[in-house]
Image (cartoon, rainbow, N blue to C red; front, top):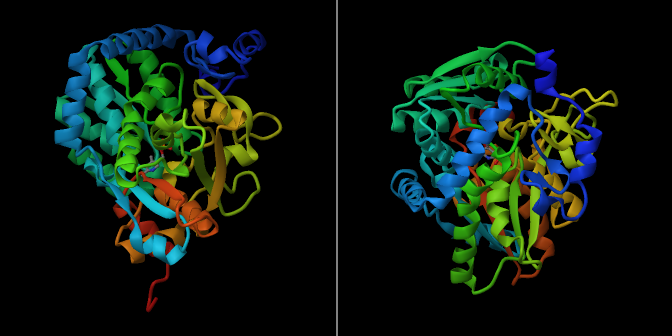
Length: 419
Ligand SMILES: *Cc1c(COP(=O)(O)O)cnc(C)c1O
């Protein structure tokens, strides 16, 4: 019964009524329009309130932001460059393409921004035990890294199927001192690892912080994780103004849970002339189960603590998902994206596995950059639209991570002999 509650339930009708409507965001913390909220077992409410209060207090404390800024700079490598992709631009013959180089951060992706923030917060709350979920292992590695840095106990839940697929990341986490716990229930992938992490949290809530890896889960996670990634857009907005003296025509980012995308988008939301384009995993087809495009094939529902777009069947059962990139392979999406989608402020499109693989090859060979397969989805959309745009248009693409982790998949998927 408990696992059922954790996995999925329909929102109470009265709650949905109270919180929908134009002023809902301002009126109800943790809501983005009708989306977001806190759909968790009673036993976790105290922990969420405690986290909420600690985060609010930390935000008021200049020493917290200073320490985080120092770590982001000296440890993680911020600010990341905004790089003009001249050869790619020339090849496509349209909009000027800039890449925000989150792939150059320590541990190879944007995830370290959030892990450092939550790690500092956990320390402030006196929690010495950290748990996290991981799919491909990237969030697990970033979490294990921060736990090593802060001298904290680290337990990572990971589906056994994912452990097989991502052996190298399992080894990385163990090397960093983390305990990796395999999860064999369900499909033995990310969704099941999250259920297991939530069960652990219920049991050990006094000593333990759950370091959630994207803008998902119950309030305050979607807001807090977004805030830790806002630095991406803050830097990028300043950098593009320095480089071009004007704002981009569009900001593009891939959307798994949606943390790198919301981090890149957020500062540009008030700039109505800047299009915000989120790129989901189109996988290998449009049938349910063949992709992870929540905004193409999904509908509103609750999964793992939050109300958002969910890929589900007619009975409300969560459907399987597929993507060549594990980081985009999840049945739900951050609730703030659901609100941005419904209001029309952001657009969401899908790039297929094949598009992402082609984009990987293209950017490797024109720019000498091996992108993460997740990031390659955003690049694929840029490659698709740039030629139709004017030469004075600007596309700002968030390159969320580097591709080293994907060499195994790329070797299997691409036949490069003599290519
Ligand atoms: C995890 C990951 C993603 C997907 O997560 P978001 O929360 O959607 O950003 C995208 N890119 C890379 C490189 C990742 O590691």
